[in-house]
Length: 566
Image (cartoon, rainbow, N blue to C red):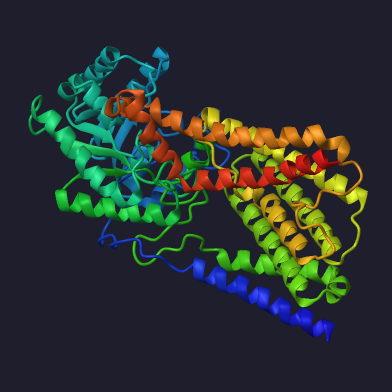
């Protein structure tokens, strides 16, 4: 009979988990299918894992060849950003696969490097006029503040005198508004429109309308300076993973929605566009975190991130995640089989739900962090944080069984739990500090703290189900040896977590308010603060992280209260 009860409860929990996984991973509508034929243009930087311009480890010729062969039936044109650094074979190989090029040269604050890049661009453009149809001198150098506009104009003029192809400069659209003299200097205006990165981020639902609005704004500006000058949307795209900004949520489905919608707008208005980008760039994680490394139509291992037609799955490997979580949960149940048999069904259901929730959280954490790890150090961190979560899950399950079996807790387990939570709280404070001070490229670490947070909720439920335990002692760290000695430390943890919540809201709001375009649109603190707060508080990932911080603090507020009574 106890075995049958355990089996039935286990089947119920697994059925609920399986049903939830199936329902939450249904294919989603991502908008109108992309019309038959090739895309107009894709940004092309063939850096694979282990290769990085920051380390001066550049793509090999065979990598360029393989990537262009893959893109040959996907796009008509590729846009490159450098004419050196492993990109020298690109025109010849593009010809081999019937591709045309918008070739660029990378310029920054270093004069000699700029001269070499421009010389290589000029040489390539003149040697390959059948492939290199347009050239771009520099990419966002004004945005980065590495050069003044007069020096940039000198570079543009030098290249225009040396090549026959149309010449441009590429930057975010607002730079052409700030420096309208550029419109006279270029043969075509190259603007980047990235709704995710706007000072006032745009939701994916409104992103294509924003695209149309910005192109019209640039057209209106150019009409008074150089009527009829062509405009190229040099970069437009959406990230498939990373941190949320306001209502701009990175996801696979949202990337598919934006790309499909952008192509429809381009077709309707006859826009000239280039999608950023062909492949995910692992090296960008060093500068721009997870979000910077995930703008590609193809992953870093050259697999399609999403289809251009039909429904889109956010997590295509969800059946494998489900299977791994079930297997892990069954392993834990098998290890505690006899102990679980003795529990009445409400308590048994709770333990099994805890076990399956922890298993699913652990699998999700391992899968997501491994996918978004791009170096040995990042993978080492992934391994350590997964092991730490697994160890905490084991401690939590052990404590839950003590409570539900009405057994007195052991000092060793109490000390281990408190120590583990203080370690996680220290890590949470460190990550929150980074997010609040300079969090533009940092992801919210929600997956890394799901087990600690779920554990607090689960132990509270265990207390509620156990009449022999004190229901007002929330986290079940209490009533054990060593509690009084930890009073000041526990109080400090609670205070710091509460301060972190406030700091996170302030830091995120300030990050919006210092944006150049934001200040221009909302001059004055009184006007800017409500708008910035609205972007902050509408951020679902940030809100989830604030809730996590609040829940992590609860046991330590409770601890302070209990000690006050002693």
